[in-house]
Amino acid sequence: MGPPGAGKGTQAGAIAEHYGIVTISTGQLFRDNIQLGTALGKQIESLIADGNLVPDEVTNQMVFQRLASPDVRKRGGFLLDGYPRTLEQVAALDAELVNQRRRLNAVVALMAEPTTLVDRLLQRAEIEGRADDNADSIRHRIDVYHAETAPLLDVYRDRDLLVEVDAIGEVPEVRRRITAALDAKLGRQS
Ligand code: B4P
Image 1 (tube, helix red, strand yellow):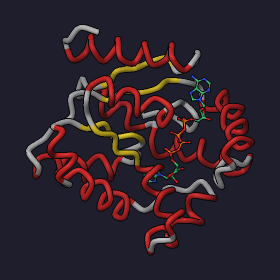
Image 2 (cartoon, rainbow, N blue to C red):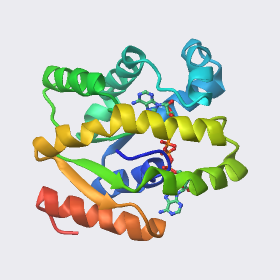
Image 3 (cartoon, rainbow, N blue to C red):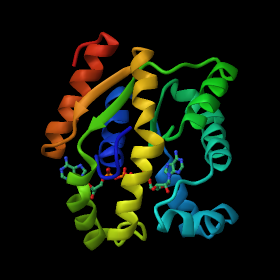
């Protein structure tokens, strides 16, 4: 978890590789659908460009399908990148994990003041040209993060799952902090 630009997508792949598990990135799955012009992609394209969240039902369905797919089940573990992002998604995920007889071991929160991350996103706009990396959309995504997603930190803190990591620093340094904090939480050596 983390505000827009905190480094979720940047860190997720390497962290999943470190633990030998699969990454399920909702943002990336949505962008793939938009690029491929699928029905889902057409439905969500303008929502994402404007910095709005995709409706919970659509998002949950997509994640649960992926969670149940044979390659994910075979790997035994998974890392959810950018999901859940609303209290409704938390409740739906809880129910689905019970269904699939799985559980969360930890929730990593990349901590940074959202407004300090605007420069990272504007920089990415120059490199990748993502439709949602413009000043208006970034501002809106930050507001949505505060309203919808930040409250989830307390939920997972109360469950003693939260691992908070300072997201300000070089990418490799933040990665080391994440694996060190996770290893400590999961009780295994780096
Ligand atoms: P995401 O793909 O999750 O987009 P994001 O919040 O911008 O994070 P991302 O992972 O891409 O970027 P990162 O911080 O790694 O979501 C996109 C959209 O999809 C959402 O706005 C929403 O519409 C929809 N969506 C996704 N999940 C959803 C859900 N569960 N429910 C409903 N809707 C959902 O990187 C940002 C930039 O910072 C990069 O350029 C990177 O290189 C740079 N960077 C990262 N770490 C850095 C560091 N340590 N130092 C310097 N630069 C760094």
